[in-house]
Length: 274
Ligand code: GLN
Image 1 (tube, rainbow, N blue to C red):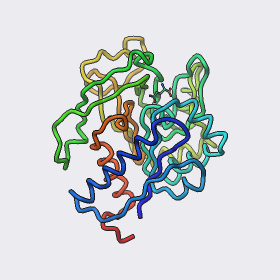
Image 2 (cartoon, helix red, strand yellow):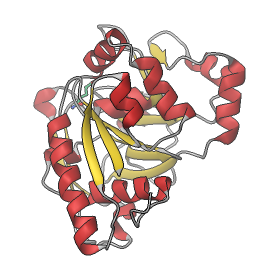
Image 3 (spheres, rainbow, N blue to C red):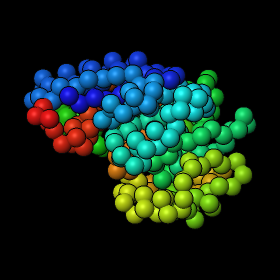
């Protein structure tokens, strides 16, 4: 059995579980995947340890981080993502928690899990009332998908943006990030970080919001947005994947299907022989 957990401390975890079940059915019916899936809510270290992969949902990153700290889950989560390197996907608040650096808001920062060598800007697109839908062209969805071609319905609610790809996250680079107004994920020692950095893959830009003037660039933030202008709203680095938007609030299972394929690849078992 392949067990995928959804961190269930706060936020849209039930919605993820619904889409994961539908995505697993799709893989079993249309792609001949035999491996049985089990989906669980993760609220403690024991449930996390049972999980082969994890989703961190949208919600409020400060609250999720606070509750995780109270439940003694922050360190186990860091181990899961950065040492065991199990597939982990964060949506919106989840992306913030998986970033190595984030801007602090007026109320202060929160403790990050880290794993993605990026700096995110929280609430980048504005307040709740400025939430919006946008059709997204996500190239990674186009391979091997019967519904390919249709844009993905992106839902952005007080969403973060990836405003900078960090060139490397050795102790030195992170120290530079640690300026006023920025929170960074802790590293035990610079050596640990160097080891992680040496092993880790590059950050891949998986999606951009088309046709938007890059606001971060306009306000003078350093932006490595690739070749064309557009806000970075999906990134992947090895086992860690993050989206600014909320696929769990749609009925579109494509990203969940894609992610479960990544999970199957990482577990190395499509045929249920494990
Ligand atoms: N702005 C929220 C935060 O900082 C995230 C919003 C969301 O997940 N919809 O956590």
